[in-house]
Length: 185
Image 1 (cartoon, rainbow, N blue to C red):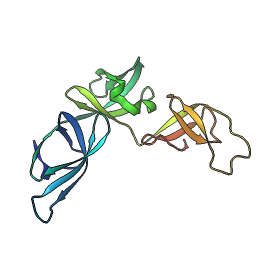
Image 2 (image 1 turned 135 degrees about the vertical axis):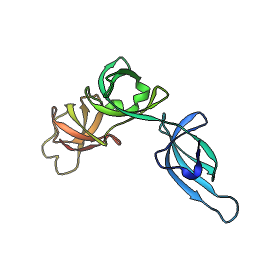
Image 3 (image 1 turned 45 degrees about the vertical axis):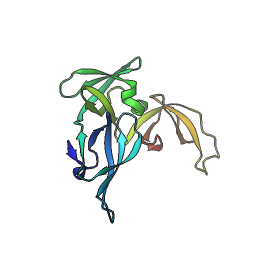
Image 4 (image 1 turned 30 degrees about the horizontal axis):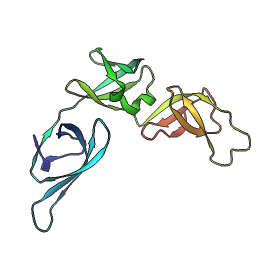
C-alpha cells in the first residue's frame, strides 16, 4: 500500500483489479473541505487514460511490475517467442500483450517488457526504429516541389506514408509512437 500523498509519475497501481500507471498527479487543497489528489491514470493493458480523484492520504495498492530486456526471436502463429537476455530463458507472449509494438518488431530486436505476476502486461520500444521499405510505388517526376507522400509497406508489414523519393530496399527511420516517417537512415 502507498499513500496518495506519495504518488510519483510512472508508478504502477492496482485499482479495481486493473493495473494502472500514474501519468500525472496534482495535489489540490480547495478553500474548504479536505485536500484531494487528482490523477491521470493509464490502464497498462489497454492504454486507455482515465482521470481519478482520491482523498489526500488515502491508501492505494501499489503493483510491483518487473522490467526486463528481452530479445525477439521469432513469431509462431499469433504468439511471439522472446528470450530473456540474462537467463536465456524463452517465453511465449500472446499478440495482445505485444500490442502495437508488433508493427515494428524484426527478428533479433531487443525490447523492454513489463512483467506482472508472471505475465507480460506491456512492451516498451525505442522512440524511433530503422526499418527497410519492402514495397512502394515509384515516385513521379515533377511532383517533388510539394511535400507529397505515397504509401509504403515496411519489412514488418506496417504501411506508412513516405516522401516520393523513397524507393523499395531503402532504410527509413520511423517514429514508433505515431507511426510516422522521420527520415532516411
